[in-house]
Image (cartoon, rainbow over all chains, first blue to last red; front, side, top):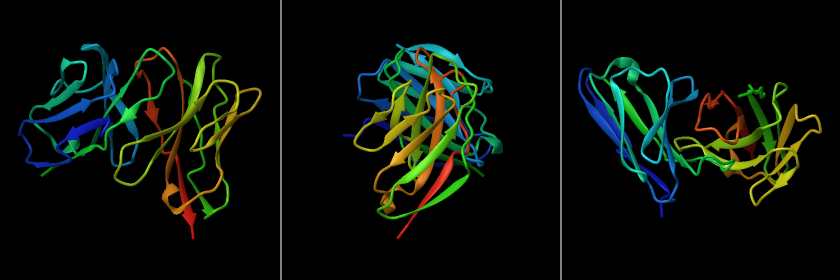
Amino acid sequence: DTAVSQTPKYLVTQMGNDKSIKCEQNLGHDTMYWYKQDSKKFLKIMFSYNNKELIINETVPNRFSPKSPDKAHLNLHINSLELGDSAVYFCASSQDPSPLPQHFGDGTRLSIL
Amino acid sequence: DAKTTQPPSMDCAEGRAANLPCNHSTISGNEYVYWYRQIHSQGPQYIIHGLKNNETNEMASLIITEDRKSSTLILPHATLRDTAVYYCIVRVARNYGQNFVFGPGTRLSVLP
């Protein structure tokens, strides 16, 4: 059973479009995250949610809007896609606050044409 | 969270131990040391973490120096499937991901 699953795995779209990425975890964790991995392979946090409430919102453009319908799901909606949005987006979950580790999905590779 | 420094790349012969170092000289008393790895095209995979004592699990061992300013991840018998980028991260326990950044890590190549 996949612990953290993201869909779609690949997303190719044109500049200006709106797209969503879905994430689900079956680990019973309270906290979920979105990360962006850029072309230099640095992985940086974008958002974190604890029990459906936004905890962290790093310096991310307003075009990115996370939504958590329940604590097992955290979706990422992106409006007016730009070339610089091309990256791999990872969802993760953990049981916070605690020292226990985060579990990551396999990523969504977003390519903007 | 404290910053970490790792060598950009390392090679290891298959079947031998791989010892991956990490410096975290500004670590504070409530920060844990975590190790993750990322195999090509996959999400980061948790390996091990520790606070002060050395830790061992089915994947690896973590050796933390007494002053906690550095640590070493040991893969006791490296296989070709251990080829990956290894990340060392320090963070406080009660943290929802603030400043949780994976740096460039160490690219480990296990050679046949």
